[in-house]
Length: 154
Image 1 (cartoon, rainbow, N blue to C red):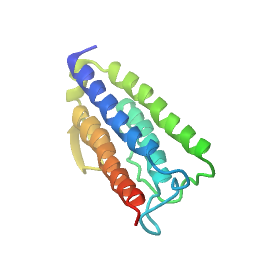
Image 2 (image 1 turned 135 degrees about the vertical axis):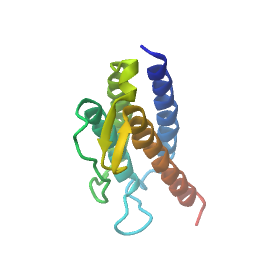
Image 3 (image 1 turned 180 degrees about the vertical axis):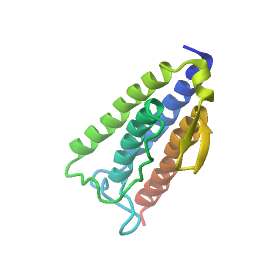
Image 4 (image 1 turned 60 degrees about the horizontal axis):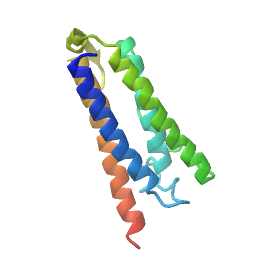
């Protein structure tokens, strides 16, 4: 495995661990909470991150695929066990994403692909880092803010 892959995988692990820490801190019964009507719930965000990882794996293999948008009301959690299973899926998809990156050669990261999210050609490294890692960090910030609101006693 090349050094670029090692660094990306290390970042994947650190970001996911931090994201999961916040999801597991969500109070029981608040998994379907959303900031306002029409916005993604906490569970919707977890589901969206799983779908985003699946998309990233596919994009690495098939650069022509179009991006996906997150959506509200795609999942409704009826028990804490169901939410825990969703978070286990978020943990497990990471291993598939790591494998996809491990299989890349050093020069693959410089391959230029069109990414419709950015409406331009980018290299594969940029797609992985900005399109996936930064995307998860963005949603982790959302979960952090939601968690603050839900546990502040307001």
